[in-house]
Image (cartoon, rainbow, N blue to C red):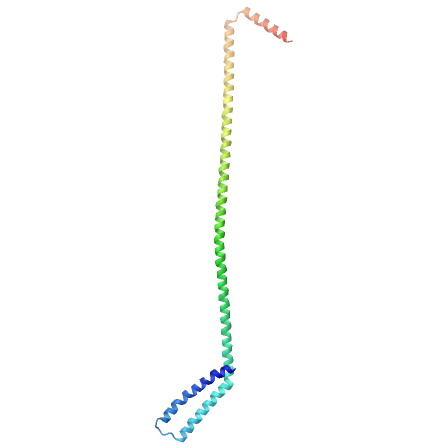
Length: 194
């Protein structure tokens, strides 16, 4: 309360001096001032001073309250804006940290994906090698089976041809006496076996 008096009182005196100075200069300028004009000037000054005192007495408190209320409101708004700015800066820093973390996380994910792709590539190549080896083994087995089958067929054909040639030779060269000797030898062998 004392602060406004020390601030407002000099301002009011300056206004009073400012208002009275032109009248005093005009009065001192050589024109004749009558007692009536001086009395009028005096009462005007008293009225002005009374008005200022009344305004100070009754208006200063509400004006100062509204000014201090407005000052308090501005201070609160400033504090609110400062806290909002601080919160926004904090959120910005957190967002930057998250963004940096996301960049690292994305890099880590890419590295994992590359590692998994490499493992998958190696697995696929190993599977392909095993499949190729299996196909090669099956082909070799099939070739071997075909070769064995061809050998068997060749033996059978050779045996058949040999039997046919032997039969032909026997038929050409066998005499009835040879037939009787062969039959007797066969019977002796069969009898010896029993």
